[in-house]
Image (cartoon, one colour):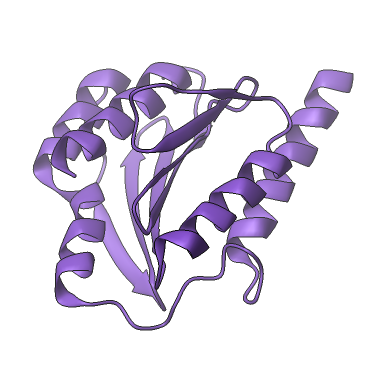
Length: 166
């Protein structure tokens, strides 16, 4: 019970950090053409293929992405849940580093991942991945996937595929 309570608290904290305007994770409102293209790669077919292969299930609907201010979010819907990936595009690398530091603090059970961007962590209990490269902050959230999908493998494969594109 204690572990579930900690997991819920950690997920709520990271979600709040990434959603609240004016927080450390609040991104710039202007995104250049090249940055927009890079952020949209979380919804590209190569990433989608990696997600589907790791989940070992077909998508129930095609992946879809949307912009909200300077955050691009792509959702992958499966018969057994949903994987959400978002990319915040910051005006500077310094702001992205601060956002990553805030996410790392909020994700109390995060383990550092090596070889992913310039810095990355993955929640041990949630399998959520937060990674930074330059002025981009990627969040891969497998928490809405059902029990029939390996959350860790799906989050890791999605993250790796994005960084293979970037």
